[in-house]
Amino acid sequence: MNAYVSSVIEYVKKKYANEPEFCQTVEEVLTSIAPVVDAHPEYQKVDLLTRMVEPERMFTFRVVWCDDAGQWHTNTGYRCQFNGAIGPYKGGLRFQANVTPSIIKFLGFEQTFKNSLTGLPMGGGKGGADFDPAGKSDAEIMRFCQSFMTALYRYIGPDVDVPAGDMGVGAREIGYLFGQYRRLKGAWENGVLTGKGFTFGGSLTRPEATGYGSIYYLQEVLKHEGEDIKGKTIACAGFGNVTWGICKKARDLGAKVVTLSGPDGYIYDPDGVSESQEKIDYLVEMRNNGHDRVKDYADKFGVEFHAGEKPWGVKVDVVMPSAMQNDVHMEDAKKIVANGVKYYIEVANMPTTNDALQYLMGQKGMIVAPSKAVNAGGVAVSGLEMSQNSERLVWSAEEVDEKLQGIMKNIHAMSVAAAEEYGLGYNLVAGANIAGFKKVATAMMEQGCF
Ligand code: 2IT
Image (tube, rainbow, N blue to C red; front, side, top):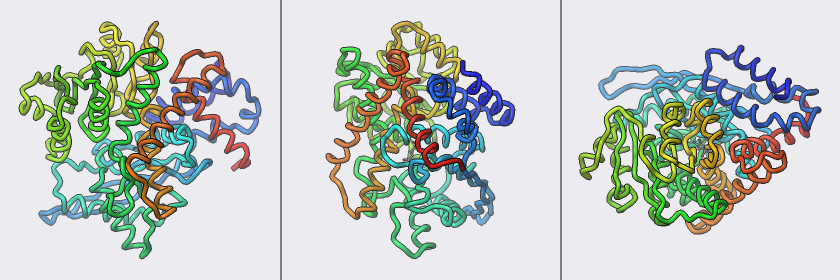
């Protein structure tokens, strides 16, 4: 591999040895884009890669809040404004007990290339807090969000940095965050957050967008292989907003989602979670009841529950890891291969360990699609929400959905073209990294050295 690329990967691994997720994504992305660096010696001259792996700005802040019993708590809030070369920083907020600087940084780095792929003018950012929303009352969530925004509001804005939701942050949290921002600013700047409620500037189809977009992307892959989505069985993970969107679109197109997972294990529903509206609606109920367990689904619908296991040993046509980072390890990848799965479509951010990803990509006949392309529909519709907010208008669900489909098709086509340009064949992982990288790199070069 290009010596400059290797040296930057080694530099990051050494400097950030205590940030394993960040090192993992840097290695994955930089390895993919090595041929582009070979072709552009001017990048090394300005040391573009070291600049790219350093966030423009990253900060922590104190978030103090009071629980319903009158006890006070202190959490750490984060915002990483990773790269603003192609637009205002854009990316979600994650509220989860295990949030660390490494997790926020890896997500911000990924987001930079993902946002570039959407073709919309959005830079990369990410944030969150090590706050565990499980079991918190509505009033506790509200107080936490208000305190979080009180610390963050002066560093964001519709033309500066536009947060959204991620794990633990949904429409409810975005509502409370926006309410506090509005109160503090004394102005109607609803372009400051996306994923808002529909009564105050939220885009129709945003809740479904990540799931729908991933199925649209899958359709492009299947089209490339001369296959139809109708009748396909899909293994999903998680049971949150993204998986819910996948189930809805899979049902509309005649495919069947047969697994869900949670921290407690996985369920197998051979008739399909996507079989009925009642089942799909139940995902929302399970997410809202705060138990954070998928066994409830098995109890309600009388299907198999496998305690403490992941769904990767189930024989299906398509595997879509849609829960969280590093969910699929080498031993899972081996099961997927043994089952003869042809389509491995990542949905969650970095759901596969690097060794498992390399192993899967090395299997003859297997098609691997990377999350930064597959899940980009979510942030793409966030970009469309920003456009609607700045123009003070509202697009219909059909209009947004049509634009989303166009964006997903384009991401697939751009990835195919980028991989072909470097003689890599139908390599969607390398293609997405290269296409995403090229635009950001060009913008950085043209804006000069800073
Ligand atoms: O990972 C992601 O792309 C998100 N959590 C959505 C980000 C956004 O700004 O909509």
